[in-house]
Every structure is written in C-alpha cells, then in structure tokens.
Length: 78
Image (cartoon, rainbow, N blue to C red; front, side, top):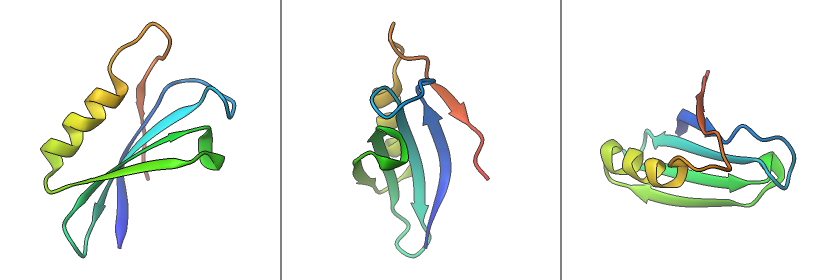
C-alpha cells in the first residue's frame, strides 16, 4: 500500500497554472515515490521511484526550487 507522506503546492489555482509534488512511501516494497503533477487532480502525473527518502527529498527540492513565478509551500497531509 502506498501512503502519501508529504505534499508541496506552487500556490496557484486553475488547471493551467497549478502544480503539485507528492512524496509517497510504498509500505510493501519500501520504495519512495515522487509524483509531479501539472493541472491539479485532472493533470497528468509524472512519477519517479527512489530507494531511500533522502534521494527522493533531494529530487523534490529540484522540482520545487525557488522561482520568481511559483511560491512553493509544503501542505499538510492527513
């Protein structure tokens, strides 16, 4: 079973501007997944797997690094 652990959002609304990045852990395999999605829940996800959490978090950092266009923030997960 895959569980979402963390979520980042670029602070924009609408299917064209919104971007989300999710960090999940697969409890069965122990693999970490990073999913980048443009366009909200309707958008097409791009997923990449990692063997360990630090590598996955580094990849999230590359996807969410500061820009003048986006205002990335970590969202609560629950």
